[in-house]
Image (tube, rainbow, N blue to C red):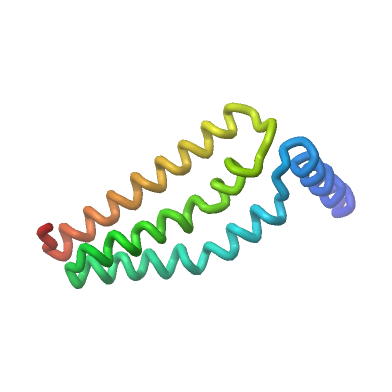
Length: 116
């Protein structure tokens, strides 16, 4: 059973590399590397909102957004022959990330009593 799962995983990774030009290991590495930046920038964004420092809010929220979408940017730039619906999913993920970032900032601004 484990051998079957490993062979299927290997086949999917080979297809991703050869057909689409996207290395799943690189994608996963980017994802793992960005995770600490994602959480740290989220923490700093919320902290900046609490301190009512808009300049820091914008800086850390931009880093937060870039950390959230970095693996998908890799797919957009280095992928080839990718079906159109994959690009659609990536765009939806990016829009969702931006939306949740701004709703979280807005909610925390209201809690902290921040006035721009």
